Length: 146
Image (cartoon, rainbow, N blue to C red; front, top):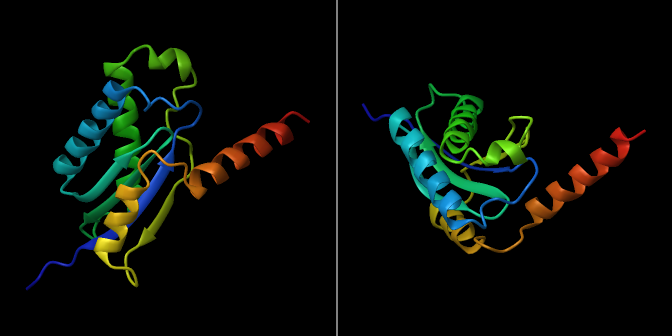
């Protein structure tokens, strides 16, 4: 009997500052995400860590919920990056490295090669998602001031 696997692409953003311009922090994040995926049986088909967000194309068993998978990735990477780079705690004093939101899409009507190409091509280029995320954050800050 063949094992069913779920393919999904996801993206999530940093909560405040663009820290991945620092190549060491970027490489550490990539390594940490790879380790978390390997430990939990998730297969990474493509990954890009850009200045203010992460793109992942993942495969995982359907017994894992997508929310659980993203929780492990965001929580584990945040914890490990704060341990490896204690200076980040000063910038993210609330303890939240990642924003609370996420984007995800199951792979159905798009080929795996198309998704891999999109993720690889998005490296270092401002995406519509990151511009939208910055816009939403700026609007929330203005509304919170009232």
